[in-house]
Amino acid sequence: MKEYKVKPLIGKEPIKVEVPGSKSITNRALMLAALGNQKCELNGVLFSDDSRAFLSCLQELGFDVVINESKRKVSITGLGGEIPNRTATINVRSAGTAARFLTVMLAFAGGCYTLNSSEQMKKRPMEPLLTELRKAGVKITCLEKEGHFPFVIESENVSIREITIDTNISSQFASALLMSATLLENGLILHMSGERSSGAYVLMTLSMMEQFGIQVVKNGADCEITAGQSYGLAEYDIEPDMSAACYFYAMATILNRKVTVLGTHEEVSLQGDKKFLGILRELGCQVEDLPEGVTITGVENYPGITVNMKDFSDQALTMAVVAAFADSPSRIEHVGHIRMQESDRIQAIINELNRMGVGCREIPEVDGVEIIPAPIQPAQIETYEDHRVAMSFTLAGLRAEGILIKNPLCCGKTFENYFDVIDSLYK
Image (cartoon, rainbow, N blue to C red; front, side, top):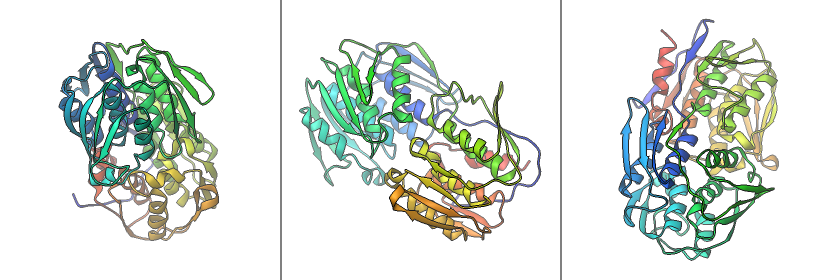
């Protein structure tokens, strides 16, 4: 499918949908199970380009991995931090979590590894993490551009007590170091700098480490993982992906419909994107956490808003499309780091809103954009090989005529049946 022509979704019947498991939780769970000291059964696993890349890497490293996609289950037998194949070549493809998490795990565990990636991942930053690993005595040889994939890691008996990492570029650097800290003989004190040192994804990592049996002492922006601890969990349930759910919650807002995403629950969710629900409340939507899942009921009209999306920036694109239909201008602030994700998402927001006839300009002083609503014009949406661009801008076409999404299958990175779910809404 080279393009997807979105049709307006007419009617007011309540909508109920199911979304895949959380990408962020799935990939952390794969990591923690591999670092564990026993066989761990993971339930509700997300199967997507990213998670398959992670699973493929674990298999290349020699881990006993049993996959059942139809039941959304994976079992991984951890060896207490040992890597079965201490000389291996892996390909993280475009998976940022696999790229950052496995780089640190292999560096701390020891051995000789060649890490390859997609062309897209080669453009994404790795240099801050590689610099800190080199300080710890890890030999890293970049095979193309310095500070980027692909590279070779060689290490043995890594011993470092303290590491400082900046979270502004990517909080995944901090999460990677935290999870693999159990591999260090003397434990680790991680000093985190930057705006996201206590952000949603770092907090998710810490919560999951605790669930898998690791105690972390947190003191402000510093975290200490004492030596001698090991991960050990026989079974773990992965919650539905709140990031995916937010496209349908935004749909409720844009279309003034009632939408339920089955299995989602705001209070117990580990995912930072649940903060998007608070924004919808501010716009006047009714948010109910019902037994079957969180339900959003939209309103006829809603105002523009100024919102700091630093801690749930994966929804910046979604919010931009919601803002395009508001009664007044909106500002999305403190999301400068999304320039360095699967695409330059700041530029993507500006380009594609402008393409639809909506006013949008960058506001550098707040690392964000201003959106000035206007009637939506027919447009062919460029997706930049970025799943979140494709899924977000599809929402505009559910209300306005003439929206066509180019390369829609890029959404396979996290939600490969997204357009099947969209098609099901017309029946």
